[in-house]
Image 1: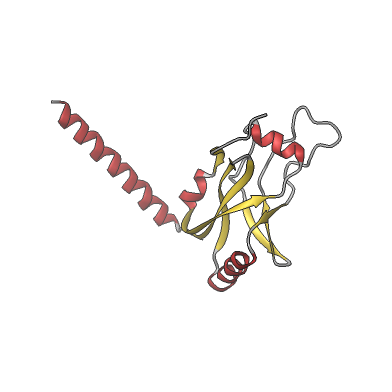
Image 2 (image 1 turned 120 degrees about the vertical axis):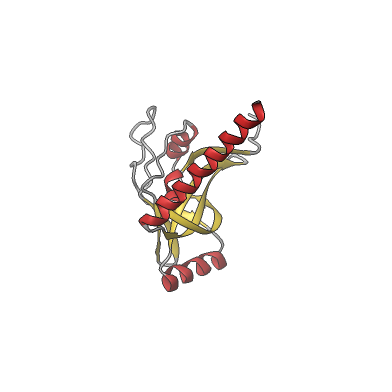
Length: 156
């Protein structure tokens, strides 16, 4: 079987960019069971409620739903279990320090396969206020309308 090359996105957490100001991002490995990998390869995952917590100096991914593999047997995994994230010690210390000092949170942005290995892009984030969300939506809508107007003007 040929080795996979490149980056293949499985799922993106679009809600995270709406609810948080993204300050910094990292790529982390995931500790998964075999049936979880098969379910991921089928594209079954939900990141919307996902978040990361520290426990005993390790970073854990929680609230992420990877449904059971349909072809699995008694070896199937539980859908919402905690999954360990693999990062270098220096990165873990840096992230934990920022989370504890500044009241930030760590959220998953994207799950993908890189060279055949499951990876998750995590971000250090600060929650947006309601008026920040409305302002971002308004700016996005204004940009879209401006592009439409320029496109219509160029057609004439």
